[in-house]
Every structure is written in C-alpha cells, then in structure tokens.
Length: 482
Image 1: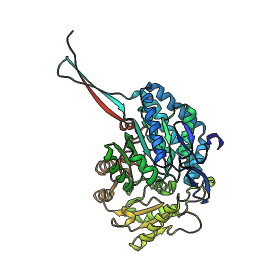
Image 2 (image 1 turned 45 degrees about the vertical axis):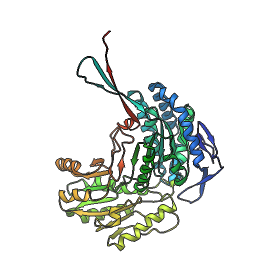
Image 3 (image 1 turned 180 degrees about the vertical axis):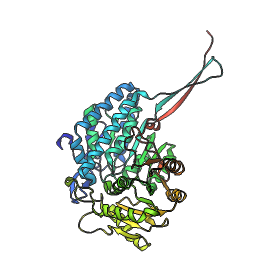
C-alpha cells in the first residue's frame, strides 16, 4: 500500500498535506475487525474556510487553462490510478468493508470515469443561434461556476469522487471535496495521486470531518458557487435549504428503493443470480440496490425458493478473504438494518432467508422477506443493507403500480422476453434509469446516473455531466456596417 501512502492525521489543502487547525483527528475503523486503521484530520469551520479560499485563489488560473491541457492533466491522474489498482482496491475494500474484488471493481470504474472526462474536457461547446437577419449574431458559451463543493457518503467513495470531481475539473471548476468520515481513505489516496499528477495547488482540496461541523460549514459557505451532494434524502433537503440562503445551485443524488420486476417469461437462470447480486453487492449499501423483487404470481413460489437458496449460500467475511459479501460499514448502520429486521416480521412479512444478525461484528446475513405489502417499512424505506422485500403481481398494470409505489425513483430493472412489454414499462415507470434483462447499466459508456422523485436530480458520471458543472452565457451581437 506504500505506493499510495499519504500522511495520517492530515487533510489535503492547497496542494499540501496539513493538520487540522485545532489538531483534531478522527479514527478510521475496519468494519470487519472494528479496529482503528489510521487517523485523518478532523476538519472544522476554519479548515473549510482555508479549503474554500485555496479553491477560490486557484479558480481563475484553472478556468483559463486550455481545456486540452486540463484534459491531459486529468488523464495523467487517470494513468496513475490505473497503475495502482491493487493498492487502491485494498484501501477502498478495507475502509468500506467490501470484498477485495469489489474494491478492485470500484477502482476500475473510477478510473474509467476520470479517463472519460479527460477526453471530454475540450469538447464542451456552446451553440450558434439562428437570427432574424444577417445583421445579428447569437451564440452561447458554457462557463464554469467557480468553487464546487462535493459531499459524498461512505459506500463507494472512489467511484463517487471520480463521478463528481472529474467533470467539475474538466469544466474548469475547482473543488473542495468532503468525503464521509466513516470511509475517507480512498478519496485521500486519489488526492495524493492528483498531487503527483501535477494539479496546481488549490484545484483539488479534500477535508474530512463530521457533517454538523465540516459538512454544514462547506454547504453553507458564502464563497461556494455550486454544491454536489450524495447521501440521504433527509440530508439532501437540509443542504438544499442551506444553499437557498446563498442562491447556490445544487445537484442531489439521494436514496433509492429500486425494483427488479420479474415476469414469468424471463430467463430465470440469468435473472436470479443478478437479482441476488443486486442486493448483496457491498452488503446492499448502494443507493440503487435492488431491494424490491416484484415477481409475477405464476412463478412466485419457484422464484422465492431459488432466491432464498441463493441468498443463504452467500459467503461473508472480511475484505481480504475476498468472499461474496462483507460486513456493514459501522455500528450505526448495523443498528439501522437490525431495526428493519425486527420490524418486518412484526408487520406481517414472512421470513424465508436470513433474519436477525448473529455472531460478532457488523455482519448481517442476506435476508429475504416474502408477503410484503406496500405499506410496510421494508417496502417503502431505504434499508441500505442486504434485505430483499418480495411482492407479487398478476399483470403488467399491477406491476407498473407496484414499481411506482414508493417515493423514490432511481433505478428499475425489468426482466422479460417481451420487447413491447419492456418498452411500455420503461415508459410508464417513474425512474431516472431503466435496465432491461440486466441489473444497472453494464456495457453502456457514458450512461447518465439520472433520478426522479425523492431520489434527487443528478446526471453524475454520464454523458451530460459536464453541463451540470457549467452555467450558460448567451451573447447577442448586432453587426454594424463599416
């Protein structure tokens, strides 16, 4: 891991590793052992002020940099990341608690996103507008906002760093990133590689800290020009309210309650492993996790039996064992998921696999509840754990109703061999993303991470993401006779 080492008890500010102003630190804990891995600086309001000031000083020069040069520098960053995949994978896996292979996948995804926006940096253009006579010229210019605040959670920190920081930088903004204090190590490692790549001081700043301290200070800062937040819907609302005080635009990527909708004509041998993986990958701690299974009544019993068997066979262990699933990330997350496991049977759901956690640590068994109705917490609320709620439907109309029966609208996965049915459901579901006969967007380059309803509004990581980090200026010129 020495290849991506960075100093402990410090954060990355103005191109240097420095301690917090008050010397405060935070413990970073391995979720599998509950032992302290290292310490990072505990940023407070003064540290956030320093980071924003550094980003503000760096902005004019970075915005004026030739976009091809910006892209070349971002690509150097990507090259350093791909050269250190194994070291970075271990950092991400241990910090979050996911299997090593999951950490490796996340680093490859992060690299791909950064490389994508390296190539996009000099392809951001405005438009030339039609005029009512040849005496006029009208065009638009996309311009960076300035200082972008990026606040991300702990579940896939490398991916979320890439998906938000890379397009912001490519568009000419500078960034202050606040990763979660629970899992900040991969963002810090990526910052160290950005330092080695040669980014000018202040272009990228990374400060870890608690939400009420560093998070609030950053998202309410009067010198921040744009906010990107990934996290819970409740916190998203609070950040949006704070941003309103400064009239700052906000990009929100919030929660999900994504359904896998399985029809009787689907290829069950393909669908069932993907459905199980969609709720057990990262121990279900993903906003797009497939936490609802809607299954056609005629195959309900067979599907539930097969899914329950596959969930029971999932192997759990610490990150370095590289099994199927790791622990939950923290004691707080363990308590939250345990609460759902207590409430579901009390509300009438039938347990068919897993259930109450046993043994030491923050490990939770992959769990399936059947006979779930739309009013139950496990059907309505985001669990953020390996807990699957099963509901059945009789026809396409009922399937559509169930798909739309939550406040969230992130991802819907449709399993069927009927193309017309798939297209109709894709049209009728209120979701930012739809996948057919697969989970999520495998194989699509530049796929937008869209969302609707209480899941927020964002296109992070997709082909239009650069636009989210620019504001458009319109220019109208009357051409004078000479």
